[in-house]
Image (cartoon, rainbow, N blue to C red; front, side, top):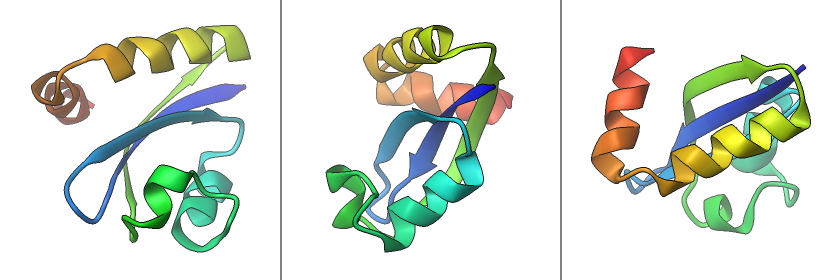
Length: 81
């Protein structure tokens, strides 16, 4: 099972990604060199949205859709959860 997730970074920006283990991935973003380069300078990050999907292909498509959203669209998506 794959998940699409959105993190709120320290500066108020959002980061979107995919993973098979959301909890592990958030830990990596917060305290490891395995976290994305974008989040390393914007710690701490907080998980604000997560959605499970069937496979990696669907997760990647959903990640792409979310990344194309405006900031307001992402905020609305987070609030609907």
